[in-house]
Length: 332
Image 1 (spheres, rainbow, N blue to C red):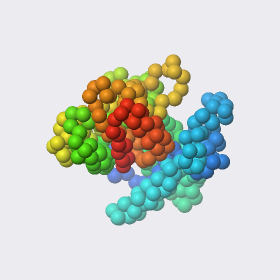
Image 2: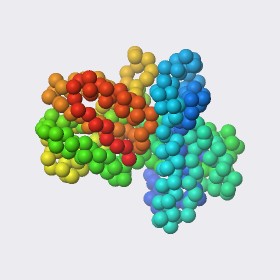
Image 3: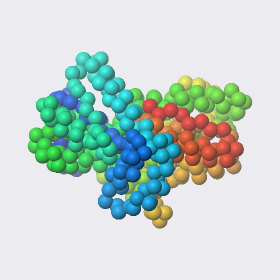
């Protein structure tokens, strides 16, 4: 790949190929970029229209998804979590003596990225370093954010004045990987305390399924990551690293096996998506001698709707129907 900058309106620090930026770069603000979520019943359908913009999906179809949000009063937890994350980022920067403000904007709901970028520019902050709340490589979790930034800078007429550089996918950062370990150890230890053998326990690492074609396009084009592309390979690497730490933490767990599963698929049934589905796999586990599962959402940085509904409701119900003990462990 040639050393050309293919990211519109980013700085030279994001140039592809050699040489990469290896030293500190001058930024004057941090931009926390999120997905967004509704904060009341009246927000749900407008939010889902934003998420599905351009696909021509009627409101009647959107209501089929809306009931997940309506079950929780129309409120997604993701905005409250990102407010807390913004506060934590600001506090950590200050603790390290780094004088940078943290702005926050979303792709699909208020506060929008456009508003955050306008606010930053009005305050004279024009070199923004963005942290997106997705740890892995795929279109929706990485490149789409870069395209969002380009769209925002063009729509606000700030292109050429403001640059936005996105931090690389951070799936392999110890601060992310290590955060999953304690609650997995706790869940498995509880199973053992109830008399279950380690061999009868299983850890299911779960992440958002994506179309197989999208997965195969994730990551650098000159690398062969296998049939699931960089997206699946990165998750498998994290799962392996987490389990190695779990077994070091409690040697009794050496015989506990783990596997990667997927959740929250959508789209036509004829389109291949990454598998196996978590609920399908849970139904199969008793035949493998599994009596208890610890469900670890390694694909997510916080407990948003896909965690609270798809795991805390559907996956736990599937485990109960299969006659197994189950515990959903913590996100970072």
